[in-house]
Structure formats: structure tokens, C-alpha cells
Amino acid sequence: MSRQLLSVQEGMSRTGLGRSSFFNKIASGEIRSVKVGKRRLIPDTAIDEYIERLESKSAGGAGVA
Image 1 (cartoon, rainbow, N blue to C red):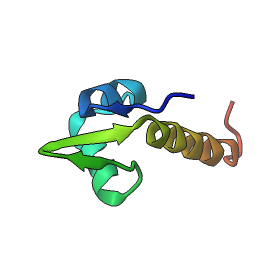
Image 2 (image 1 turned 180 degrees about the horizontal axis):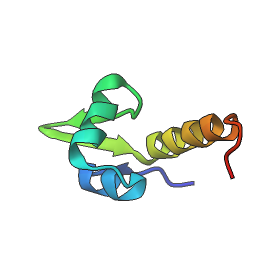
Image 3 (image 1 turned 90 degrees about the horizontal axis):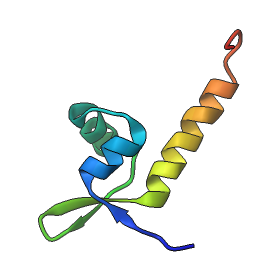
């Protein structure tokens, strides 16, 4: 599998989060990121991990259809 670094804009598109929410998730450590020069980049695996955590939290909820 080929790993990629995504721009913030690409990460926002993949998660459906807005800019402020996305940067809040990065700041809190919910979404991992790396700094390359002046750019903040997101490993594609970090997006996958974030989505998996959301799914497992959602699966534990009662009464969700």
C-alpha cells in the first residue's frame, strides 16, 4: 500500500470537517499531522484512524439506527 501525505484541504474533504474543526482536531491530537517546511500535512493513515475511532464510538451507542 502506498502511503501519502495530504494537504489540510484534502484532509478536510476526506473527513467532511470545516477548517476550524479540522485544525482543532489536529491541535487536540485526534488527527495526527506532520510539519514539512511551513506546510502542515496529514498522513492518509491518520484520516483512516480518525474515521475508525468515530465508527467504533458510534457502534457502541445504543439506539442508533
